Length: 196
Image (cartoon, rainbow, N blue to C red; front, side):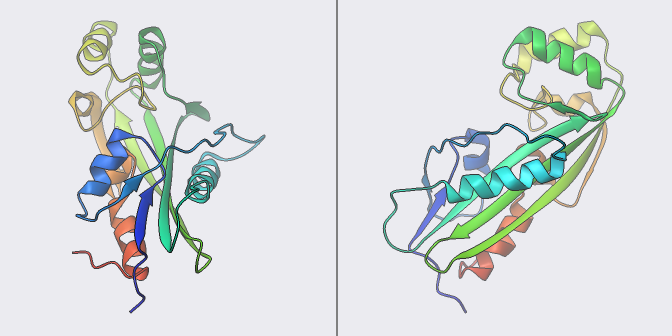
């Protein structure tokens, strides 16, 4: 079995990703990284999520010794429109009105990079979210309660946002929250981690 690295680093300051990674019971450090998340011309949503995950994993710096870094990114799309983080109440309302009664695709990429051995593993997990029909009053009430301004698609599925769904389908339910733990756990096992 491969010997595990000395340090595990999450290349993200997302509280959602840190909470998910914590479920695996492994000690890890967090590093803020700076990666340009702008999509390239004609870049598909899944390809963007994959590229950004790898870029983030490789952006970790200043760690001595043998370490493994985890990068992750999520891209949401509906009818060929990428849904970013709304940032404001007005944009969240507009996004939720747009995706009402439609299916939203979430592409969640995860990458693990081990510089000492030059090993890189990555994958993208797709989640389909079918939204129920939402009226303006429901959208306003939802936004007031969850304030999903930092969430692609303008909802928090792990909170009240689940009430906006008709259905969801994915090979890894944690992918929708931002870090696909089923795939990540397998990647970490190949790098010497025992989970559980």
